Amino acid sequence: MPLRLLLILLLTTTANAAQSIWHFNNLHTIANFKVEVEGHPRQVTSPVGSALQFDGKGDSVLIDGRPLVGAATFTAEVVFKPEGGQLEQRFMHIAETDPATGLDAPPPPTPDHNSRIMFEVRVVGDNWYLDTHLRSKTGVQTLASSDKLHPLDQWYVVAQTYDGKTYRSYVNGVLEEQADVAFTPHGPGRVRLGARMNHLTYFHGAVAEARFTDRALPPEQLLQIAGSRLGADPKK
Image (cartoon, rainbow, N blue to C red; front, side):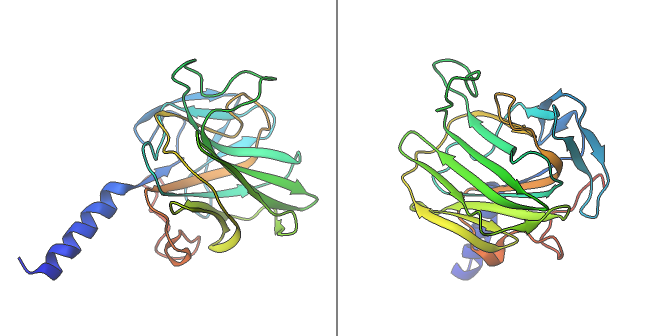
């Protein structure tokens, strides 16, 4: 087999094995993981496909598994629509389960030191700004910019990447913040949509899709709302 063809096949196989798309289009099974429902989140239709709607008061779903286990580099992307409400809202919490306690996060008011990847918004009037957080056994970093405001009630793709040295956050493919941080790959755990693992800072809005890759994608390869790179929803 010619070397050029072999290289293309190897890259294609690696990319397929290293990337997964999660469609949030039901309240039973997501990415082949069982779902536990809190409150009354709803499945809704939207311009980007089926989505889960959260009321910001007590709605969340717990997914019994997580992506990016063992990944030393990564990209995490979420297609979502924030709709206002309280200042601090967590819409995705990817936790590593503490092997010593068996908990994804300790109950409040105990501080949460579990390794995790998380997405939050900060609501300011009719706008919001992105807050991402990365924590592992060797480093902790938050990225947030209160001066980079975006209008509420629109669909966005938010992303965070780690390339082995630098942690970056993006809104619609535009770099928001970056910082260098040490990182140890996470072990198994679970994902909560719509709130913190410990049932705080509920999210008001909708979440349609996420994509996880075990390498840091450049901005031009991130998901887009308009265009062919947004994953097809099988239940749209």
